[in-house]
Length: 196
Image (spheres, rainbow, N blue to C red):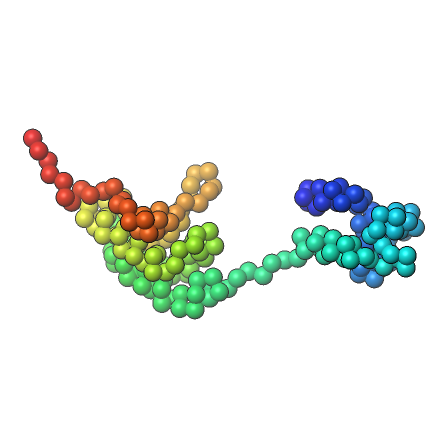
């Protein structure tokens, strides 16, 4: 709301004057408590209305811009956001995870509907493709398998996990970035030797 008032102030239009512009644009009778004749005189003097009290081009653009703040945006479908074959991709993703409980006591594989919602968030906030997601996930699971799956996240928490401050984090995004940059995750414990 503050942004709208700032736009009105910047344009030099009072809320009442904008109300009159909007009423003219929508062809409705303004409320009797707003002084329409005074606002119309001011709007004509400032080039928002022509002599016939019709909106000028700049007024029409301005009214449409302010009106757009109140339009509800249609939520993208899962197909539009995740791709036509997203259910197949989620199945492929799930197959990477083991079919048993992790040492934490949680099942490694989460419900597909929960994963769909998590992936919707992921693809809204990150620009990786499915190939990168699947390869990064394989890298993650292989890394934790070598250590008995200790401290490994479930398939859902790997995509996104809510932190104590209510923000979301994504270990998957970190692994996608490492995969694309060719960097190691830093756990090359399988190849270390202990020398005494």
